[in-house]
Length: 248
Image 1: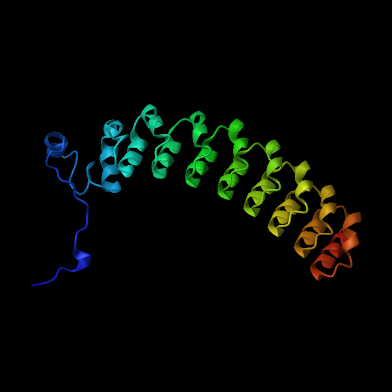
Image 2: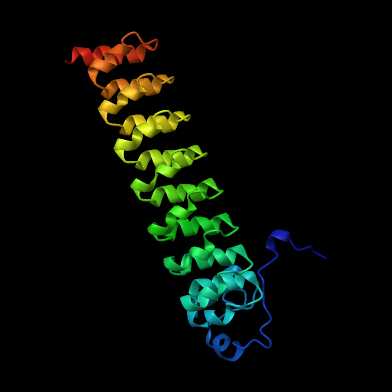
């Protein structure tokens, strides 16, 4: 007897149409199809295809025992019904909820145990309530906060423990306040500062321990301050100072 090739075995989940409430109408009319468009199969792809075609039925599956069916139903059900899932035990369901409910209703999810839920909240929460998330335990959540927080309220994040967050802050901090980050421990953060800082303030960075920062500072700092690096141990910096003096 020939043994079937495992690669040829169809593993598509199939639900039993016997007893299904849609057997006599949707199935008969082509509105659903076993193995392809099916609400009863434990298959996210089939469930999504079914509810995309019949979104008016999504509310009937908001309280379904299967987490994936609830999560997909949350994409299509009326928002009022989705609100009932805000404390769902499954994080995937709560992620779907965070995308759907009105921004002003997101507050209960600000401290959700799931990072992806909190990231979605940080991306959608009204800006005037966003500052409450600046101390989130996850750096990716704080990075989203730093991207959206009003520039004038970024000061609490200039000493964030994560350099990726501080890079975002450095790109958005008002120019007059950039000096507060001139001595950041991360080279790439200071590079952003040196590239954005006004010429007068760049004097702060002429003594930076990294030659790249000194080189950037020499390019635009007041000439009377930049010439102090004419004897810098790095040739590129000495040449930059010389070039500036020649162009005067």
